[in-house]
Length: 303
Image 1 (spheres, rainbow, N blue to C red):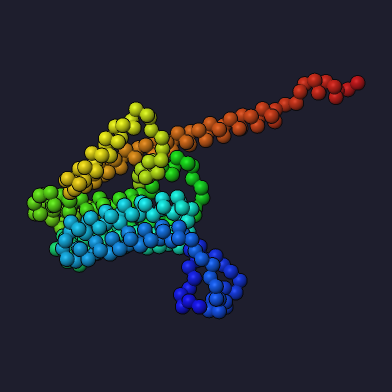
Image 2 (tube, rainbow, N blue to C red):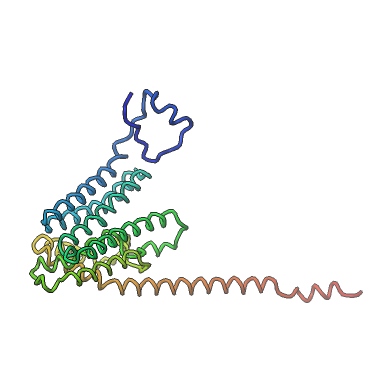
């Protein structure tokens, strides 16, 4: 008999489960594929915790790199779970907890030890606001997963800036200092305002493009240019990491108005098509409920 509770990724209710827990001799084996996505999530959590240590030691380059690794692993674990058909409630809950540490706590501690500590207690409050905003963003995302179904095109958009993206763009002042921007320009008040703005974007209802857009089809003549662009970005990240991260963060921020405009254009078109459909149904119903055939009146008239 094992001293550990049997691993049940979906926590399926069973009659008399707790009464039989300690006298159960044989436990049904769990396939290895069921635990692989959670292992990837735990690796991401280790990266986030390592980032906290690097921030305390003021090794900010490594701290940012650890958060970036956590973001990459966060994008992988869900894909691995769907590919192996091993999605579970356990994995979803573990992923949310890891995301809060990786993209809420770790960036907040990095920013506080880097610049916000110059503002004393107020700087710590700003760090708390960012971490709490990440937690609220993740909680809202989890609730939306079990909410009513949305039109397919709305899956192309997030509601607010996602936590991983928020964590990477909130480091923009750090990127700028790492590329040689004078620290006097990146004062604590500037970092405070920018951090609060990113926190607000995470909890807002601002529509932002989703990573699910990657699954859409593109024209064949754009495939080769896309390959070249991806290779260029990877090469730039390896050769000039902080300059590239700064440029990518600015590009992401500049794309937010475009995603808002694209979303509301599509929303207006969707509403218009629904109104046309409703009007068409109303016209069809009025035609079917129109006056009876005149011949029927003549046949039923006085003889």
